[in-house]
Image 1 (spheres, each protein chain N blue to C red):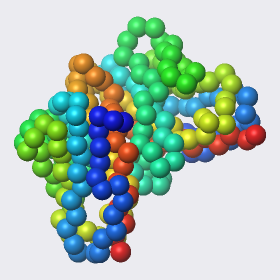
Image 2 (cartoon, rainbow over the protein chains, first blue to last red):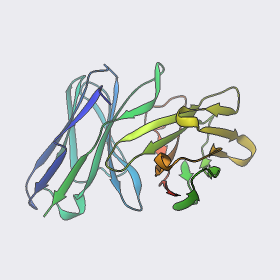
Image 3 (cartoon, chains in turn cyan, yellow):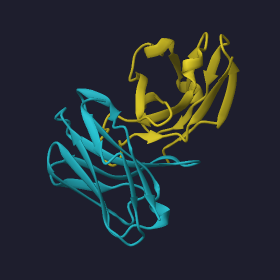
Image 4 (tube, rainbow over the protein chains, first blue to last red):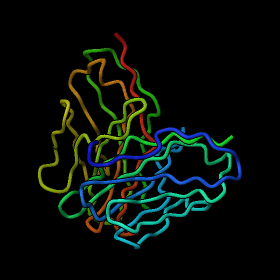
Length: 113
Length: 117
């Protein structure tokens, strides 16, 4: 979707290194989300944000941190990457009550070796 | 606990045949229901959504879904499947207070659709 971009699209990193994924939106939506998608698990929420500097944990937040210093940017950091964090990461945005239902980015495929 | 169940992991249908993908939910308040589609290597795209009113909702690409409160179901249907419909489909449930910890969308694990020529 043109209103939400993720970078990088692909990344290979080594175990133990920190990694930051970026989500950028041009829709001025209040809510932003980070999910990971793994076979057999569907989509699992890592962290979400409901405003600048307002964030909260999802169901699989261990090993991840987030920051949102501007409305348009939501960063996901893997503090010390592990092989179990190899996954596809999706960012999503939402803005109730004007926009129910999320808009998703195209994803970041992260491989930890 | 709030949850979404998609009983079928993988379904194969012939091109031109009808399709029904099942979704059952457990939610403590009035549910807002969604269906998303994901093509390989892509993000999720919203197909349709139900908030209130007519329980049969129409979406993009010729899809429709019917909300049945008594069965806690929101099944997705299409009368005639096209080869381009091959993808993975996700059902999701949320609430009026969506966005807070009690209202974030909860996704099912998905149903992969294959289409035979």
